[in-house]
Length: 398
Image 1 (spheres, one colour):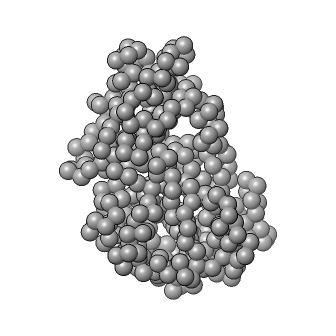
Image 2 (cartoon, one colour):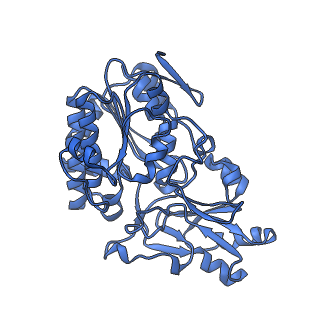
Image 3 (cartoon, one colour):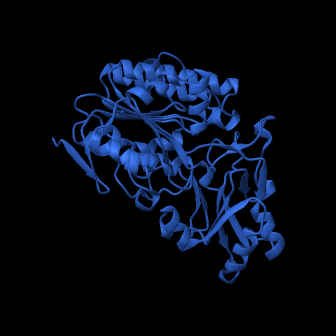
């Protein structure tokens, strides 16, 4: 049994003195923290400022669920672990594929390696699409709220919730607390859903109610003696403008000249219509790429257009999986494929709030316990990434 595991150039100590709980609050924009503390709905998290550490970090790009959750559990960007979206185009077959397992994963995970070295580790996720990635080689509990079975329902003490509900995330936290209290896990990763954040801005009553319930559960983990670390996979912004990029390119270059892939696409499209601020574009004719990039860059609301090599280098993405070019919307703009492919009826009157671009890259980075001198200096002087959170929680506590 080793005291330290090594992964992707980092060393992680076993959680010996205290259990460690890392929570990825999906869509937890720093504005929710600021508003929640100001409104008094986050008293426990507010206490992290005086009793632990509160800062912000940069999420991995694109700012979607899969790349960032896998970055967090591997301590590395997508260029290392290979998961660059929720959805991708297979260049070899031409098929569009939703990523729901670990077949593209190119790295071990912190959880998996810890469990193989005698640490009681567990992963609980709201969305089942993440379960196989988070559970890669994990010898311990790994399940989702979405498909919780009778055994999990008994553990939590209630039936599994509706997938489109705030309770999908609260169920994850309650399951994690039950695993901790039972001794079934000393290292936990809990990944929530952004259902609330897609529909409700900071200060909305629904957002306050959810975040207050989150804070109450964080308090229970702290009371149970755990080091609690909080971060997010991405922020969240209103997107009043939508650019249907494939329609625009079809008008200029002909129908079928380009295929736009929206990597936000997942089984939970009702609350965002598969619209985010980062898309990948594949040209039928290589000679059209430069012209297509120029046309894309001229569109209102477009923040950046990057050819394949530049996108891979700038955003730390695997080059071999990258498109001919990528297009980013600005903070107020979502980018889609064709108007016919995006059903916004599920918003049910709510404004479109989404993520994916650089405007949603800043996320909270908080720990319930104070940092030692070395890690405090890092936090104060270096660029933090959300995927530094396990390093800080396992190695950096005073």
